[in-house]
Image 1 (cartoon, one colour):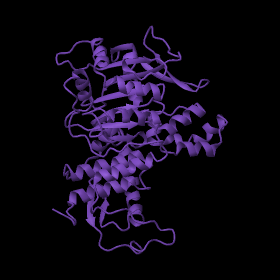
Image 2: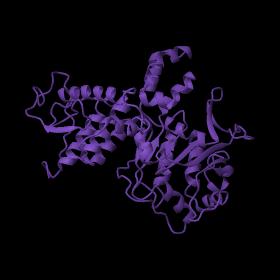
Image 3: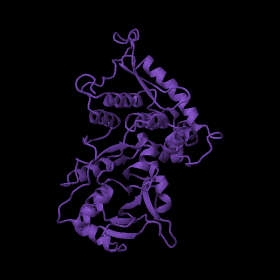
Image 4: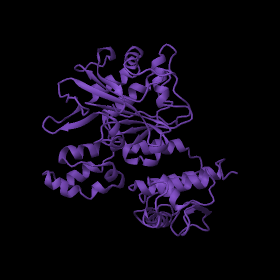
Length: 424
């Protein structure tokens, strides 16, 4: 079934949901965005006739499967807010939309209907300050929308690479590099989406300046924004400066450099890299997808749930102004020498059906060395020999800390300091 210019009604509905999620009415609330996208996915792709409250609590808000909905009203509260935001969207920014999306009271299954007639001013604008309407579904490619959002969030970065194709198959590496192929095939698995989650450099810098930690729950709910004035005042930082820092959407150059290195590898490059910004990521995706998490838990709070399985933790030296690793396992040590370090951890995702690769470093030169190391057959094969054998030669879940001397990016000059199964 088509709706003009060859686009299907299903695609039109999906694109409408994505435009609403990216609008000013939802783009600052990760939970409302997740709720909208989950409900529309169930209605469009799964053709669900009815979506139950307990299902939403489990899959969107991380509640236990049998939680008591009578005492926990998180779904009802967010659904009520979402209904109001949808009304606001279609009355203003979405006034020219041909389709209307609504969530009836007493049900969580979205309803799509055609707009009966344009709202006044929908085509002529809403006064002198009117903004042009967002592009309609016709001729729109979902990947272009994703790319446009990505470019916007990284506009302040030094450089950026463009990847637009989602992951549809496992990465392929030359047969001459069997260990590299095995490793990356565990990260980029056939038939499963893998997200590259870039760190939030602005939130990392805010914590460095104020010494105020931002937990994942506070980051996801944006609760840390409420404590910003007090944290800034306590640290002697101008509140307006702190606000300007926190609200910027940019990642670190080290992340971009890491992706650039990987994109140059035949068979691993841009065909399967799907970058996401930490501020736009969600528990639902981390449970369902495989992921590569770049940064430390300060700059990328999505690393936090995996830290109990990681003995290598990263801290910030306020006096020296740099990050350093420490082994918190019994008998471990702190590594504050002048050399650079990078750590890699391969772990199961939150849902247990995919894998997560966590890559952290002391800086740009160290993460460059990490990228070189992870695509160098002799280096990765030597690392594999330090881990327990498996029947299919796959990597067990593990963590490793690797030292890089000076600014060297040569993988064979790197020294493996720690290599052990995860959780040991």
